[in-house]
Length: 252
Image 1 (spheres, rainbow, N blue to C red):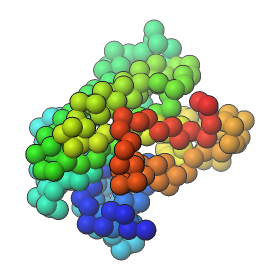
Image 2: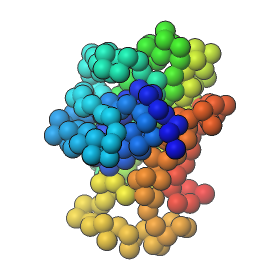
Image 3: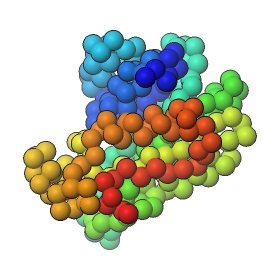
């Protein structure tokens, strides 16, 4: 399939895990991808993998907590590929995995600043370009933890991702008449580093998940990416403000 031939796609948090899988999936379908994140070396590896598979990608370092850097990221994407058609706001962190009353204030602030304000700032600059240039599509990466499910000792992350789900729906209503279509994907435990518990191997995670969700396995990163590509595609042209849960049945 080549649903995204010559589309210009920006993916934040593209240096590893789901972000890398999403960048690779778009490139495999003909998109020109800007892989963005804070660490140049990991972004360069994503770009290498895209190019080795015959795709087109460029790396741009940017911190989603910095509005000026995000404005520059959108400008750089347009400078390299002529426009910005699709944005995937994937960057996020997990900190403060202790009971809610014991979360350090700096951990709370860091999680909310990255996971919520970072998504809002990214959308702010993406929307500003898109609505002046014929529209576009945005997919935010939320989580099944938040609006859909809760677990102990993850209050900061859960709060942040519930906010992303709500922010996505609110922004979708605000900007669909501007030609900007916005949705979210909410993964559960997936084949990405963030889903590993401290000291846990991938084999340990697979064994744990056998009894944790109805499907009995983690979602592959490529399966989550496929959901993102669907929401970004013309096949989802009337899907607005949706939060697509991909969590092996955990929150069913």
